[in-house]
Image (tube, rainbow, N blue to C red):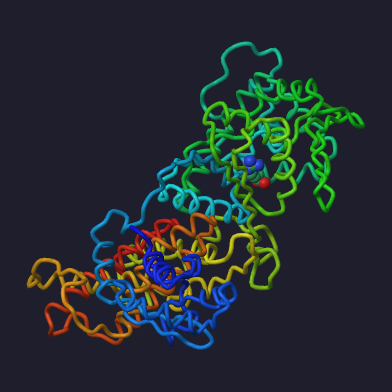
Amino acid sequence: MKKLIDMIAEDVKEAFLACGYKEEFGVVSLSNRPDLCQYQCNGAMSAAKQYKTAPIEIAKAVVERLSGSETIAVADAVMPGFINMKVNEEFLAAYLQEMSEQEDCGFEKTKQPLTIILDYGGANVAKPLHIGHLRPAIIGESIKRICRFAGHKVIGDVHMGDWGLPMGLVIEGIRERQPDLAYFDESFTGEYPEEVPFTTADFEKIYPEASARSKEDEEFKKRAQLTTMKLQNGDAGCRALWNHIMKVSVSDLKKNYGKLNVSFDLWKGESDAQPYIPDMIEDLIARGLAYESQGATIVDVQEESDTKEIPPCIIRKSDGAALYATSDLATILEREKLYAPDRYIYVTDKRQEMHFTQVFRVARKAGFVEPETELVFLGNGTMNGKDGKPFKTRDGGVMQLEQLITDTNEEVFKKVRENREIPEDEAKKTAEIIGLAAIKYGDLSNQLAKDYSFDLQRFASFEGNTGPYILYTMVRIKSILAKYHGTGTEEKPVAINASIREYGEDEISLMLLAARFNDVIEHAYEETAPHKICQYIYELADAFNRFYHNNKIITEPDEMKRGEWISLITLVLHLLEICIDLLGFSAPDRM
Ligand code: ARG
């Protein structure tokens, strides 16, 4: 469906044209004085300069022309030349009725679907997910859903850190515990055992212990580095052990991402890019793009227009080892070969911006991607504690993601129990659903590049601009609908525009907001800005609650009106459902 505001603008443009002015002046925006009007056009002021006429004269002429408009009921010319407008309510009602009959509530998918590689999550194998991984996961998941809803083909890749020093540390950690395993026997030639040589509980301790030890024990660290090299150079024992580590780790990660309602199409990692590296480096050198500098191999990426220094991209260290950038470049080669994406989107901490600037520039310089391929870096801000400093546990440690989820669910559980009587396990399940909304909404309602403070009390509150408030509103609508449908007296659904009547102020506000749906989603997609959806559903929920408090929906005696209201709030619920799904959470039936 066309956007409502565009349909209104079409009429205004036509009016400008009919009055002898260029139609480009008929730009319409939402009113910034909702007390006076719903929409406004300020074009008469700009037209006045060009046509050397008083703006108010132009505005008056245009307003006169608008009298026959189907979309605009009231238009006023206001000094010095504003055009203030109110929508035709019949038109608005018909628009909403059409929305409720259309797939995706009238949102039109793109006619030119792109293939998008979305690189998010970025978990590191063998290490538990900590809160640093929360934002890329939550934001990436929402962007994936928004792009898909817009009609694009999105391939989500977790792109694990599975090839660096942590792998060597874990392997050495295992050796410390079980030095006799076949993997460490240089003379071993048979098949390595199929069963995993450690329990999950043990596994969780191995990395933190090895990592701590490497900070004190230089010799141990050297060994881990050597082992990392051995793994990277294809040592069979290391590789076989690494396969076990990967299996255990990936299934653990899947479980934890699952708790966040986050999923990936690809479980690839840095290791998958390795086969591309030797040829890539050779090619870059052969083409004169990469060269030796102080033993390392580098590619210059500084450009003339830069206002600050962009250091060269190091693709090989003096000891021959590949780096983070090398693996990201090689990953681009693999992705080109396998998926040939039109757009790459990377969601990760904004502190990695320089890294991606370098990688993108090398990829362009070397022609790894087509010139029209888009390379997008979306750097997320940090999640801080209430004190504005990076979030820590009470004893100052790094907060594990699981802990954060547990704490949130406990807080919500208390509230659910306070709210009404409910069996414990139902309350637990409900708390999990609400808890996730609290975390995700708390995160996504901020612009993604901005830092924010995680405030459990506030995020979990059932009032205010929070996830639980949105869910509470949805549950309220669900319960009204259940009551209505439960009476059994209902007839066929009544169209939102069934009667011609005077609408209440709250009703019109709600209707106007509902009608903005496709506009909002389009902006959220274009600007990769999930926070726009949060803003929208907060306003929509608020408008619904005002309407609800001022009207008795179920007991409304006018049957037609009641039926229309039911259809309207059914649409509102549907819109909220689509939106929270795009944000990556869902609503319970009761709370
Ligand atoms: N594993 C990385 C980290 O924890 C994030 C990976 C982001 N994606 C990428 N293609 N570099 O910092």
